[in-house]
Length: 465
Image (cartoon, rainbow, N blue to C red):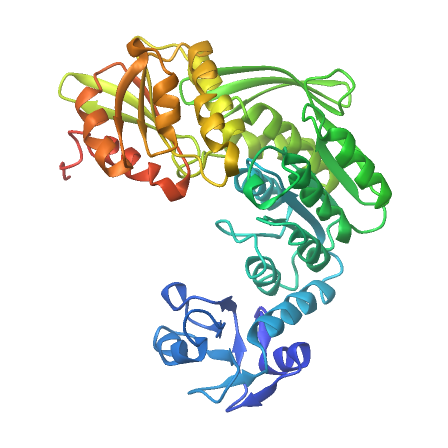
């Protein structure tokens, strides 16, 4: 019989708390009553409401016990500060499993997809653990650690930030043996007085917790590679590079997109590779190189790494494709609605332009957020890569996208609206069989609503059987 994730005695020892009620054991850790599973420990974090108020609801949903800051129903470990206690529990999980090879991923674009692709490779090599969703902040990272089973062999953690000094403590929680920075670009620049270089320095904080002899995997095609490599060396890390250059440890030679997949040609430490992936976006060329180097650093064999990449499907809102059946035929919907910034927009347009289609190339775009004072300029600047990609029609929504709309030639203007909800019927009325349609924008500007509306056009949606 397998051991529980935590016993009440272990939780009390890790957090410095006191047991209230009967002793217990748990098989999971949760901070949200909506996702409680039977046997979980519910951590009553303070938020807009006192987390202790949700303990009865958590117990009713199946939680075995709680980590609370005042007397509550059921068994609990009582502590002064539940967030600090969660952090200590995460640290204890790391310390009790010294055999784990740990990796950490950050970057302005692609963190979640790269992390999950790495997870797929780790699972092929043995007992693996990783972040779920985008649990990459001051709560998500210690939570992911606290959930790590004691017999884990390899783990990968996503680390995000909005401001300076946020990554450092998260890296020190994880203490990774290998880190990857996917790329650095003008994301969250509104929070950095010095602009993009400030973002780069904040991403370099991931080296703060790297284990002695650790590996830093960096994008040699990014303008901040030199700065990041210098910071990695200061931390005692060995730098491994990926990119298009011949001197890269993982060199991307060619990326050939096809419907629903792409074929990559690469050289890994000089060895020629040729392999398929279930992704079509050009950014998956360098992403795949980063994944291969991370898996190598975490002691995963090349065969397992290539098999994992070959089977890894696009995540929801991050390049997933769907054939939508209309009365007269199909159109292809590419859902990139989860997030957007100038880097990912450019890569998405280039990918769209490289695809063969018998119909039109159409994009539906919503505002890119957190770009600071230069946001209108960044939006207007999308006109050039749209032109280079040969996009036929642009549908745009939001006050920032108005800058792009004004920069487009009249022949490329499909429709403009103030919001995603208002744009959805405009593009829904315009799509035709044979079209290749991409939806992209920041999650906060509701691009997903446009993608959902287009998907709902499928005449098969009401079928049963």
